[in-house]
Length: 382
Image (cartoon, rainbow, N blue to C red; front, side, top):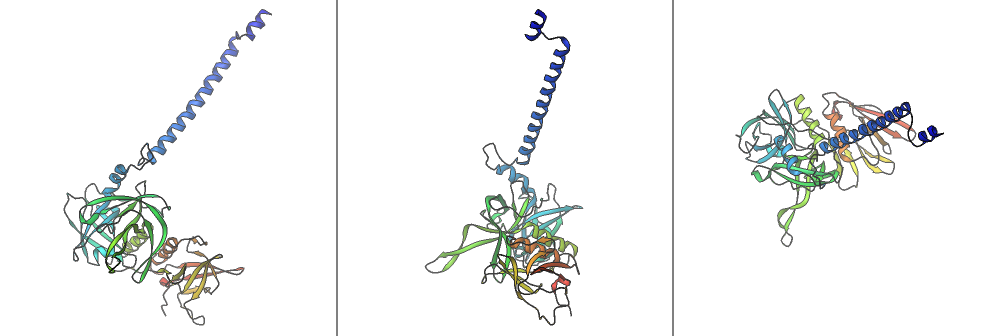
């Protein structure tokens, strides 16, 4: 009886104690492993978001320092314009640079400076797309130059940093957010897809980079909204605060790939996808021979731009008809929520895919599916 009481009061035999000890240490080891895993995960998250401080605010000092080696000053050799550029690739000692067409104006050379203490060096204009205002330069890479990582379309509200040769005084940075990730900006006789940002894109910053919080390039700073500075007389203009626009980086990258495939120094082939400002949400697919309008059903064809009894030879298979709903362009699935920028991007895949590369458009016609295949950039080559 005494022995049993002692066991019940905690004086168990040795094997039982050993089992409990092993179980205790096993549980402790599992807890420690879980704690270490959580700590490592937290460290990874902290490193991935290293641009944020403990207070949750952006660490712009670190972010600016990380992207600055990718941004260069660009000077038009013939027009004396001051602008910016972004290195998107370094290969065999050569730096490939995005800039704006309006900075270089089709002159075969432009001057590039990698930092404010360096010399201006002559670059080569590989080609451009005047419509999208993108040009590509190639120049010997300076020591310390870094190629930017290209990102996809940013989300609305995302913090960004615009970096460029502000007023021609050297590389500077301005913070803001993405106010709209899918926007059609009408300028002159063209309507182009842009990202709207609140960061100032001052004179001289054309062709510079718009970067997200990880340092990835989301856009090429290009347009600045202006307003009449003296409404009473209607004279003079001034920038509108918080309304700047950038060409999406993914579109600039597709244009660059086309230029690199055929570095002629001139204008490349293209397809325009224009939004008609007079008809809300109507899209004119120049070169694909139809217009479409967003409806509750999706992107519905409302105008065809070819003679039904004599369609262009570049269209094979089916033909678009009024009332068709566009379900797919290339690899892009189309819904009523699909923005203009992805539409542009899908058509640029076709335009920049090489001579003769086809584009497939899938249409829904009632209960049927119609497939139209375009060849030769949608042009009638008869």
